[in-house]
Structures are given as C-alpha cells and as structure tokens.
Amino acid sequence: MAPADDRVLIAGAGPVGLVLALCLAGRGHRVLVVEKLVGLLDQVRRAGTIHAATLEMLDDIGLYERLEPRGIVAPLVHYWDRGDAEPIAVFDHGVLAGDARFPHALQCDRLKVVEEALKTASGSDLIEIRTGTELVGFRQDHDSVVAVAETAAGEREELRGTHLVGCEGAHSVVRKQLGIEFEGFAFPDRTMTLSVLFDFDSIQPYGYRNYILDPVEWANLFKWTDLWRVVLPADVNADEDALLDDDVIEAGLQRFHPTGQRYEVVSKSLYTVHQRVAETFRAGRVLLAGDAAHVNSPIGAMGMNSGIHDAVNLASKLSPVLRREAGDAVLDRYVRQRRHVAVAHVQAITIRNKKLMAEADPEVRRRNRDELRRAADDPVLAREFLLRASLISSVREAAGID
Ligand SMILES: Cc1cc2nc3c(=O)[nH]c(=O)nc-3n(C[C@H](O)[C@H](O)[C@H](O)COP(=O)(O)OP(=O)(O)OC[C@H]3O[C@@H](n4cnc5c(N)ncnc54)[C@H](O)[C@@H]3O)c2cc1C
Image 1 (cartoon, protein in one colour):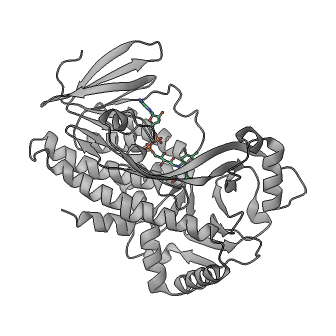
Image 2 (cartoon, rainbow, N blue to C red):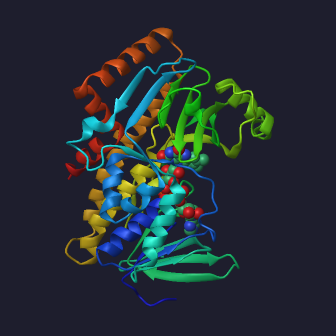
Image 3 (cartoon, rainbow, N blue to C red):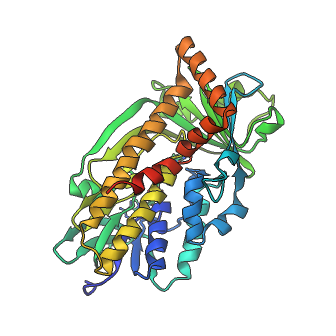
C-alpha cells in the first residue's frame, strides 16, 4: 500500500472528477484520479450544453478559452409547438449582460470538456490520472481513506489519501458502499437520444437550442457543430431492440421532419430517466459529487452543469481543510449548499421542463404558451427566467446557505 499521503482520491474522470482535480491542483493540492475506462474519449456523447454560470467556473480554471472555439456560442433559446413554423417564444441571454461574464450558453459536448480537462491536467505535476483502474471499494479511519482499485488485468491495489470523492457517475460504488439512499423516482417512459448529421435549420429557422412541445411526441433539438442532437420520447411498452432498429429510428425522424431522404444517424441511445438525489453527499472523509450524488432528466441541461458546480464548491471547502485552516465540519456546508441546489433547483426545473414539454391538457398548454410569450417579451421576466435556467440563481442562493 502507498504510504499515508496528503493527496485527495477522486473516483471517475468524467467532467466532474476532472474539474474537481483541476480546482484542487489550482489551490496547490495533490490529487489521484482513478478511472475505469482506458479510452476516455471513446464514449457516447451525452451532455452538450454548458450554461452561463458554468462557463465562468470553467474560465477560472483556464478551460473556457479552450472550449469556446470547439463549441457554438448560443445566446438564444427557442420554444416551439411541434408542427408550427413560428416559435412560441425566443429567450435572449443578452438580458444577463449585467449578471454573467459570458451571457450565452455554449453548445459543447461532454467529451470535449473531458478532452480539454485531460490536456490541462497533463500539464500539472499535482494531478495523477490512472485510467483502466476501477474503484471497487474503500475503508476510512480517523486520518485517511484507503481506496481499493482494480486494473483491467484484475490486479488489486490499495491507494491512500486524505479524502475520497465519488465522481463515478450514477452507479457510484462509493454511494452504494456507504449505503446512502438515492431518493427519487424514474419516469415511466424512456428517452431516445440521437446524434444526426443534418442541417435542421435548412428546413425551418431553428435556433441552436430548441424545446419542442407536444403531448405525445415532444422533442429537443440542439445544434452541436456539424451534428444535431435530437431527443425524442420512446414507447415504454416496446422492446428495446425494436426501438433501436435503424428503420424505426428513421421513421421517427421522418415523422419529426419529413425530408424525403434518409437521415444520417451517427449515434443513438435509449435510456430511462431517473430523478434522484442522494440523502447526503458526505460520510466522514468520503464525499459524493455530480451524477454520483444526483441525476435528472436531460431536458434543461442541468446534469453536467450542476455536477461541475458541485466540484467547484467542494474544492473551495476541501482546500482549507487540507491546509488545516478549517475543520471537516466545513464539508457539511458543501452538502447543505449543493444538496439544496440539487433538490430546489435541478430537480424542480427538470421535472417542470418535462411536464411542460409533454403537457396534454389543452387549457394548461394554452396557459403555458402565454406565460412563455409574456416572459420572453418582458426583459425583467426574461432575466428571471434565464437566471434560473442558466443556474446563476442556484449558485447565488447556495452561497447564502451556512
Ligand atoms: C445517455 C445520456 C444522455 C445524457 N444527455 C445529457 C444532456 O443532453 N444534457 C445534460 O446536461 N446531461 C446529460 N446527461 C447527463 C450527463 O452526461 C451527466 O450529468 C454528466 O456526465 C455527469 O458527470 P459526472 O462526471 O458526474 O459523471 P460521468 O460523466 O458519468 O462520469 C463518470 C466517470 O466515472 C467513471 N467510472 C464509473 N465507475 C467507476 C469506478 N468504479 N471507478 C473508476 N471510474 C469509474 C466512468 O467511466 C466515467 O468516466 C446524459 C446522460 C446520459 C446517460
């Protein structure tokens, strides 16, 4: 086993684990990241929108200037009724000029964040990243944590650190070993996520981020450089293989927008959406962040963003603990602040978004449309709407929680 060490152990080199590593190293602390995958860039694209609040945090660790040229600056958000040629409402992030360093979202997928974070981390002597190394368990005592990791060859190693942070996604080994309840529910339907090589704005004046309302076949449509991301609901009763069949997907896309020519689908994934928050994000020297601590519907692009906010917040609390300027109790403030955001902002907004998209009652649909129009047309209401949607409100509110 490695000798007692001053390093922080991080499980998972996703966006959250890597941002945490960069933030801690930026404050002068050593970190060891263990990641079970060998080829980190050989993954399905997932999250793809980075909100204004997150862009500032990424700028603070030198990532914004790397990511902006690789993404699309998206100041507008469009809401549509499916089948309509004109949007219901268009929100312009310009109203956030006094609130945000970058008053826009950046369309830039998770893999680019991972890739640029890895490049930045490779320039730091304080960060060690071991790929092909899976966290399989841990134990902790008063002074340290010992993580048990297993390589792809099946070799086990014990790694000691001051703290362990589980950033290993929704199926977190850390959360499960701690027996922490993952409270919440799963939506009964499933969601199909497609990456498509087709210029949707050649058919209709779509923006880069589109929320398309429909009681049966709501949709999300996002532009990601040359690719567009299409999110569609999938029949809950149908067989998974049947839903992923190329012809079935093609038929769904043609229903969405008939083109008369076959769509080029680059990737497809089908998943069940869970809305869950861990009952706590801390047990002694072991903490949770990102998807390990909370998961939600992708409608609203809150998962990767709020996870990165966890990482930045946690680094600011762990650093004084590591310097012996604060006791471990300050870590409970991380839990109070970020768990509040997970419940009162991320869960609340994403559940409401899903309801808005799929609303079936004609009277409620009419009211929703009126409210969206009124909010988009009034700069005060539009600012309030976007402060919440871009997670700026959540960061401000969390800062006020002791
Ligand atoms: C299909 C899909 C589509 C999505 N689409 C969107 C979207 O459009 N918008 C959005 O905002 N969010 C979306 N999300 C959610 C978003 O991807 C996550 O919120 C975000 O990636 C969370 O980052 P993370 O670093 O916490 O976890 P992850 O990105 O899941 O990273 C966890 C890392 O830990 C590694 N790991 C796992 N177990 C271990 C272990 N035992 N030991 C070591 N390493 C381990 C994994 O290999 C991975 O690299 C989607 C998620 C899915 C599954």
